[in-house]
Image 1: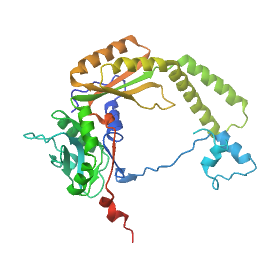
Image 2: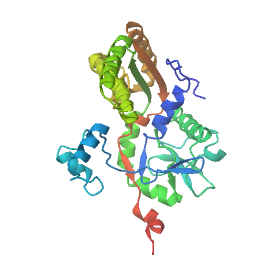
Image 3: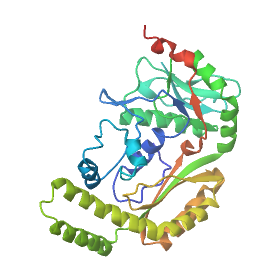
Length: 88
Length: 254
């Protein structure tokens, strides 16, 4: 299996498997709406969320701002637009 | 369920392909100007991600790649029936034929390059951040965690910025031996400076590898990873939208 593959030049083992997974799960011909992968009968669900990342400091800064911006009631993209959401 | 491994340019006859997913037999059907590679699975659900399943998929794809141009299909691509499969693929005949022509007689080679850790720089960054930590009273665990992560990010950013031009030069040197090439995004917290793939004509594989090893010998400051030959996973430039009628039963909730 994979006889003609180049041996990995990294010291860790399993790089070829990682390379294969990188391709087989993410590339090639993709049929939309058909990908649902489970491991050991546990479904892994992919959510198309627009995730916002922010630091703890920035989060505290937002909270301290008179509690005017409860995170649960304001869209995160609105915080970004207002310059209070940290970095994407 | 019908499992789709790859789309081949023709039916490969008089050959005995390896067993596929779930040890099922592998076969092809004629579908206009191309021939999908399939198995009929007993399961009605998606295939579990396991090492056996991954290799089962890849073995079949690589087997057909040796005999005819193919477009590899992403793992776990299933159709309810042969009719649903052919109906969907025929709507993409033009894209399939164009892509088959592009990858004909070519393989994919992957090249990744990592900058080796700059211990002096990392220690400097970490010491500065530790000083900063010590100045802050009642530092929470969360803040310490963030500062540690920040040290790694900062060093990775420093190395990526320092070597990005060399990465571009190496990419262009290898690109000369390929029909097409592409780069992929690099994680901000990694030491990687190049994540690239090359569509290499079979007759140029030896030259490509020789060039790679020469570059590697000239750049001891980097760690290199060459992988392949792979089926041309990274050079398929279209996506398929499944025909809506094939999911009608799932959408009908009442």
